[in-house]
Length: 237
Image 1 (spheres, rainbow, N blue to C red):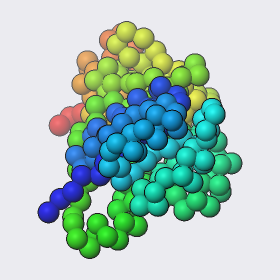
Image 2 (spheres, rainbow, N blue to C red):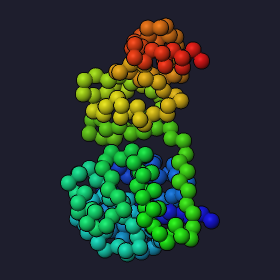
Image 3 (spheres, one colour):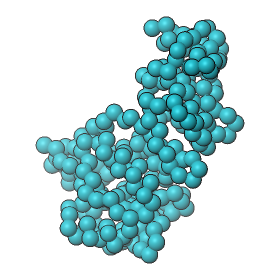
């Protein structure tokens, strides 16, 4: 027997709500019962609907997430979300299931929901819930003080330059402070390949290659010695 996890998202930042909605929509066992911008909206939904789990931003105007958490039924579990690491202690003092630091990756969110399942002893004894993530088609990066969605299908190649990364798309370039290794962890391995310490390329975007470089449009991207064997074996297949 399977059971749905009824979730509520509470965050005053529209982009943060959109990211969480996008992540949760990929998990079959989860149903989003509401997505609201403040504690008052959350109270109304909690009074009308059955909620198992709240993804709750800590820093909100008027009524904070911590205040809301203190007032909800103890059977409703809380996973705090915030951009401020210093709130973590306050969150765990309220026996929160987990504490997620923004920007929240899909992988980290899955860990938090798995932790919720581990702690929810009643459900575990009587029912079985499977987390079945659908294939992700995009991810978010922070650029120019906002979170921007990047679709895997639009990426040509990714370039690391000093302390920032350039994501080259078909029609524009996105610059973010993330590391190239951090970006690599978000990419589907079957669609992208690291060819250099500073370059990741989309396999579908490669027009031609030699032992020394790959060509994407008019751009020649070097294959480094340390990656050459793996890269050439992959491309020659």
